[in-house]
Structure formats: C-alpha cells, structure tokens
Length: 559
Image (tube, rainbow, N blue to C red; front, side, top):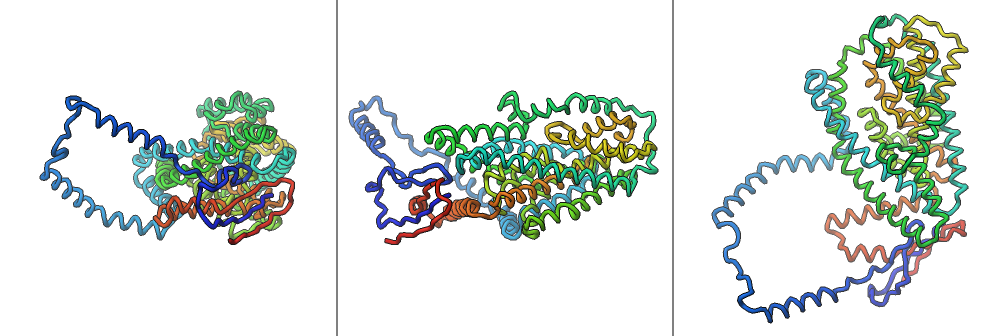
C-alpha cells in the first residue's frame, strides 16, 4: 500500500534541497524539488554575442531597416476589418460560451441524433452524402484505442505490486463471469424467439442471389476455429495487431509487457512506468478533443443510416426489430439489474456514469467509439486503473451480451421465416455453437452477419432470411452495441466488487491524484496559479511505496 506523508517546508529554497528527495506516484519516482534552470550556458552565449558585436567590422554589419511592416493606412484598414469581424462574431461567441456553461456532451449528442434522423428522413440523399463525417469520428476513435489500452493496462498491472499470480486469478474470474452472462443472453434470445415468433408470416425473397451470404458463411467456417481464436489473442506482431486494431491481442501484449516489468530491475521498471503514465495522460486529453467532434459524427452517422434504410423498413420487419429491442430490455431487467443488486452496485450512480458511453455506442453503432469514454467513466465511478484496463478490453471480445442475444434470436427467426420448426434439441445445439463462435467476433468485419451465416449453413437453414436482415441490421446493431457497452461496464464494476477494490483505498488514492491534477490544470488555465506555485504544491507531497505494508498511514507535519 501507499504511505502518504504531507511535508510542508518552511522555506522554498531549492538550492538547499537534497537530490535524494523524491515523489513516488503509484510505484515510480519523481523529483520532489525540480532543479532550477541552469542559465550558465545562456549567459555564456549572450557574452559571446556581445563580444562579437564589439569586434565585428562595419562592412560586415547588416543595417537595420526602417519602417518595417505595412504602412499606417494598411494597418488601420486591417485593424478596422479585425474589429468588424470581432463585432460580428461576438454574439455567436457569447452564445457558444453560454451553452458550454449550461449544457454538456450528452445534450449535444441527443440533439445531433434528432437532427440526424430528421435530415435522413426528409433528405435521404443529403444524409447519405454526409456519411464520411460519421466515418471520420470512428476513425479518430480507433487512433486512440491502442495506445490508451496498452498504457492504462501496463500502469494498472505493473504499477501496483509485483504479484503476477493476482493477474491470472483476475483473468479466470473475469472469463467465468463473461461466459455465464453471455449464456444467459443466448437463452433469453431463444426463449423470446419461440414466444414471439417474429419469423412467422415473413415472405422470403425466394430466388434472390445469395452468393454474398454464402461468402460470409464460407468466411465463418474458415475464420472462426479454435486455432484462429487463439491467434486472435496471440498476434504475429504487436505492431501488426496495432495496425489492425485487434484489442484482444493488444491486451495480451500489454499483460505480458507488464509482467515482464515486474520481473525487471527497479530502474527499468521506473522508466517504463514514467513513459506509460505520460502516454496515458496524453491519450485521455486526446479523448477529450475527439469527444468535441462526437455530436457532428454521430448526427452524420444517423442521417446516413436513416437515409439509406428509410423508415419503411420498420413496416416490413418491424416485428423482428421490436422483438430484438424487447429482448434486450428484458435481458437488462431480468439479468443485469439483479447482478447490480447482488453486487451492491449503486444503480442510479451507475446509470449516470455510463450515460455518455451508452449514447455514443447506441448512436454510432460502434463499441469502439465508447471504449475510451467507458475507461474514463469507470475509473471515476469506483474501479481501479488495473482492473478497468484489463476487464473492459477483454469484455470487448468475450462479453458481447447484446450480440449473442441477437444471434440466437436471428437464427430462430431465419428458421421460422423458412417454415422450419426446429426441435428443442436442435435449438440447444445452436445455442452451444453460438457460445463458442460468438467469442472474439469483434475482430471480424461484419461479425454478426458472418457468424449468423455460418450458423445457418451448419444447420441447413436457407440464406434468404439474411438478405432481409441486412436491410435492417444497422437499426438492430445500435441496440445490441449499446447493451454490449452496458454489460462491459457492469462487468468491470462486478469484478471490482469481487476483488474487493470497488471504491477502496487504492481507487481513492488514484482518484484523488487525478482530481488534484485536474484542479491544478484548471487553476493554471484560469490564471490563478503560476507554475512556481504548482511546483510548490507538488513539492509538499511525498508518497512512499511500501508493498510489505497492508495499511495506509496519513500524517502531517506542520512546521
């Protein structure tokens, strides 16, 4: 545990400070008293310039030009134009600042969703034209994922002790929890499909070209095997995994790297922790910048979805869409809410914490868009860095609750639409198949359609139903993706409760450090805190790491 001592110096004379005084943040050290800037070299350069100016011959000197710049008339014209622009933009700037104070990101996301739906409905062509704006948002999010996941996971594991066995125990508990919850999701999908029977009365497009669906089925049979599943975890190269955005492979590399740091010498470990700490801080600032663009990207993505599919698809397959949404709501009420009660997770606080990640996932139909914000919100809510950095990326591949529920329901829908009455034994066999094939699908493009097509081919169910599902897949993808994010965030909290670290001492120290750094940044930006004052604040805190102690002591020495 960390031993924190508040040390207040009577004088801020850095010259008298010992070079051995350190701050330990997490488990790496920083200088308590930053050395004064050495001005010896700059003074020497100034003396050389003065000496050169005194000894330089006159014919080598460059005369100083008079009246450098624009004429006074042009300067006045430029100033007048600048003042006019400032006066014209002043009302807009005031309105933007007012909205920034009175609103938040959630408000703008909801507003952009409404605008996107209206634009896509009344002007489908314009909605489809602005689709690249939505794609740009997803691409910016993908830039963040690899460095953020890697740095957060390395700091979380290697920065809090040297017990490698603790990581293995957490991995086993996490995988067991994921398997149980996804199995319940599959069961609810099967039950709802048999009760509602969304495929009855649906007329399949018999005779249509199903070559595209057969290609997806062939891809499933070749790509989703136990060997390929293993190589989704163990990459050929870290950089290849980073380029392909294979999150599970990045998690594997980060865990191996962190465990190697635990075995390395203290100096090497300290250097790598400093690098990863700096990288994680920069990437979370990067997340903040990208989130400013989120309303534009989400509005454009929704406009393109509505413009491409239209509202008319709801009439053709409305029963299927309604059944998927109802099943996901039932899964939330019957499975996830009882888990929250059992694990004693604050329900209202949890819903408030995941509101923005859930909205991002629902509106963009992409789990990747919500991943960085889910990291940040779960750390603020009560989960430690180590646990958050491990559980959420693993859930990205193993805990796709919404996707697994949808796959079981869509499979039975396809059989019902084809007029097939599958016996219970066959449905249980389909459930077992999906338990295995749905794991790791996040790394496969159009994963749900790939797994669905392969399952239909295995049980000789006609492919024509997949052609109809393709038309409304984007609408159902929004719901299942948002449930995936909800389930991953809840899994993170449950594992924190199981490990005994939910809002514990370790989390409290991490959160206090984050809040203090944020406060310093805000004070400095507002001009209320100078750099020297910030250094004085930081120099008053000494954090000493002692892994042999089981308690954290707080002492103050007031001189």
